[in-house]
Amino acid sequence: MSDPIQPSLLTIGEVASESGVPAKTIRYYEQISLMPEPQRAANGYRLYARATVERLRFIKRARDLGFPISDVSELLSLDDNPNRSAGDVRKLAQAHMAAIDAKLHELTQLRHTLSSLVDRCHGGDRPDCPILDDLTHH
Amino acid sequence: MSDPIQPSLLTIGEVASESGVPAKTIRYYEQISLMPEPQRAANGYRLYARATVERLRFIKRARDLGFPISDVSELLSLDDNPNRSAGDVRKLAQAHMAAIDAKLHELTQLRHTLSSLVDRCHGGDRPDCPILDDLTHH
DNA sequence: TTAATCCTTCCAGTCACTGGAAGGTCAAGC
DNA sequence: GCTTGACCTTCCAGTGACTGGAAGGATTAA
Image 1 (tube, chains in turn orange, yellow, cyan, brown):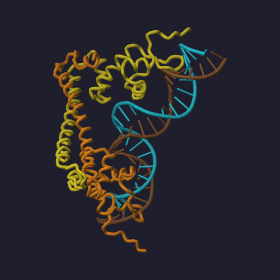
Image 2 (cartoon, chains in turn orange, cyan, green, purple):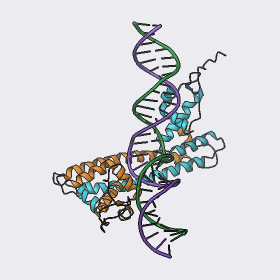
Image 3 (tube, rainbow over the protein chains, first blue to last red):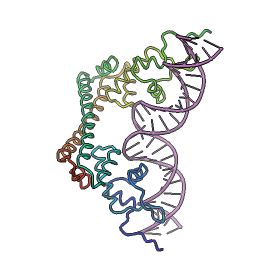
Image 4 (spheres, rainbow over the protein chains, first blue to last red):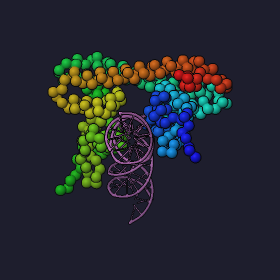
């Protein structure tokens, strides 16, 4: 009846500051079902169990490693599943690495091209410019 | 009175195929004012001068080099301005290169971390996995 | 009582397109 | 004359992963 808030439950601001994930982002994760809907206090505030902080840290670390949300979702499922195989996790990480490698390759190419253009440009006050020439006549 | 369509004017499909920029994207560029509004035929079709193809190729090349639209807009202005200085163009390109370098650095770091995690994972059927351990306990 | 700091929801913006719906136009073939 | 297909038009919505802001309620401290 007295419906006391259990001392172990945390507000969104608390899990946010403890996990490093902004409250706004936590609500967003709930909206896209990456995080489950939490309990609510009588006043409508979200209330989270302590373990939620770990969950959010897991997500944050995965995001910091560049995994897209869809991968994070899979990683969470694997983490929850005691019958998982490490091979499945490894495959996911390898696929992500391959995507990063592709991006690195693309950016490296770009960098070479830009660097050669910049090197060939005198950079002075005259209007003639090999960079614009390249854009115009490539 | 007879309002003949000049033979040198092109439809959006024609400038699209000659420039390599999809018609949809050309309309989008018009919407964000990267491209000016073109003439219209009596039936409402967009009609472009031949020179538009060069303009679109310029944009496409700049986009392929990774310049954001705002930079492309500046590059077009510089290209149009006979009093430009090559130094301004060079500065823009260098700033873009710096952004690419930052991205490269970030991705390289990521790649190292992921690579070491993947290397440490046996990848077999057992559930124990250093990748998940890292996500959980980092 | 007031102010500050929480919390809530909902809407809009970021970036650069891209897909799709619903409909008008045009040329060719039967 | 009719149909078919390839154009063209506009408008709306979705992508990824948030982020900012408005408008308002709740709680706490001075």
